[in-house]
Length: 148
Image (cartoon, rainbow, N blue to C red; front, side, top):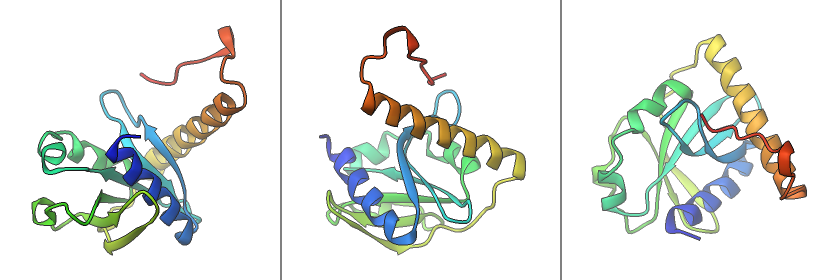
């Protein structure tokens, strides 16, 4: 596993403590792929971007495009990451491969109802396709690629 994937695993484990379910590498729209999308018990949608290094963060020019696809946005980094680089008006999660902790809650900017419906459908289909691929990794002609 890559360092960002290890952070994502810890984040996903921690989200269960908040009664959130998660999927990784969801594509909300063409050209964007979020590291972790979390769905809360009341339909809340959080996006968590995992950054394993300063260089990883500095090379990410798309993150602001994720804001219109969630109610809250977070960065997930390890304890060695220079957190002063991260914008103050975003959430902050410290994570490792096994767990995480929310240090700063991302500000809430609720999705419009139509956008929320789209994201709920994308989340559901993404999760179902992942489960189906787990159960049947070689479905042949039945496979439908969800990426745009």
